[in-house]
Image 1 (tube, one colour):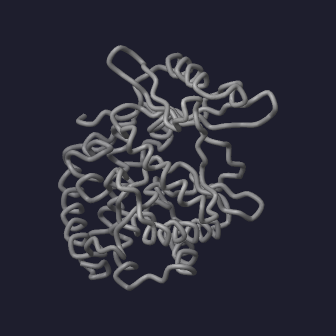
Image 2 (cartoon, one colour):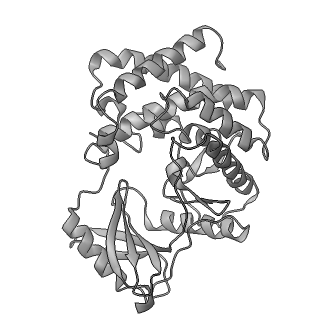
Image 3 (tube, helix red, strand yellow):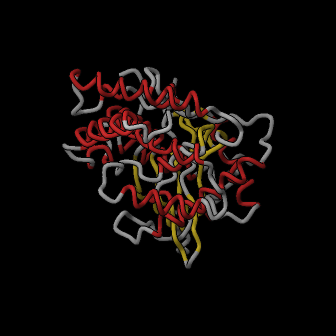
Length: 336
């Protein structure tokens, strides 16, 4: 495996680090700590004596540097100024929003603490119109991205074909996914050749490529009293806007209702941002590229609960999606 991925710290070390991180903030933000999830990062809930809650995010090493995290927070500030409900970071006693704590003599971890955002997370069991809400809020983010002028110091991760599914991809190699063998490689390689050709022709004009959330799926959406709220901007970076359409159905691209969900997403998105025929035609390519990217993710995050929950047939379904994609290409139904 050529990419360091999910955090190597054990749970006791993470708990200790979370407790130490709290000491960087005023006493009003202290409280009982409990782990919410571990994936790219470890996220804890902090529950204060007064009932207030906060989210404490411990960044793993070897992914985002401190200036990249500060750039994420800068975009959140700009989005919040427009009325979009997104996470709001707290400031430590030193006046900094990103705290850096030593883990050892040679290793540090960056930590950010956020105000809690209330809301219910929709799932694929809900009314598919939830995807229309997801599409609409994604369009609002894209509109902002196209207007906003980032500060000169702004630096975020780049999501393009090579960094998603190339040999040096940010999430590792798709070849390392469990359930994928060498006999499957030619099918995926042929699919990638076609994807590369399509995206080269589609291009990276400012109307098609810019700052995106990059992981805006239902699990990163909160619904509260009719309001749609977006969380987890940890993967935000430069990418194709239509990649966010593919990200909307991450991990469930093979589901029988996936096409219906994408249709609702597009309906919501186009209430604000009409799409061209080329934009619509490229979406199947984005979806298959995302699925192969997630093969790499599963291989490099094999110890995480999310990766293990996907089941034994997830890779087989991934290969089926590749075969179906190539069949539509040959039938002339995909932008080429």
